[in-house]
Length: 125
Image 1 (cartoon, rainbow, N blue to C red):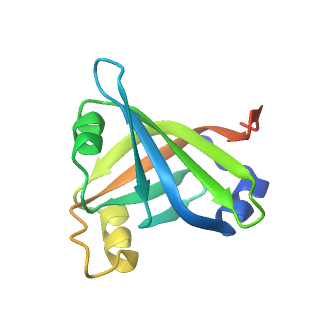
Image 2 (tube, rainbow, N blue to C red):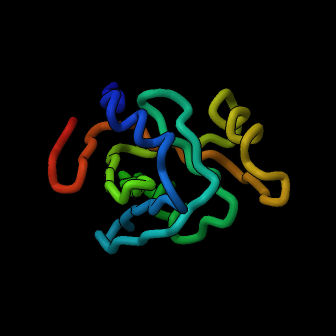
């Protein structure tokens, strides 16, 4: 499994605003959402809390790969692509429950496993 390049791992900690999580359905139609309840579980796993997924959940359960786009305070953009695992229990789910605000349901944890990383159009991994 690939991990985030050190530069991108540091920039993740410097991100600003919500991330964008994109998935596709079985017909190839994209769906993108803003998400604020996110965390780096490890260097190869970024987690998004499923608080209110609808089409995103359908796409994940159908096997969609995903893309996370984020921007830093310096306005640099990074994109992380990979397969998505869906956790309703276990260590990744338990970790999400620790940082996901109590006011949100935290139904499950969508864990994007890092396969490709971009800084703008430049492929870093």
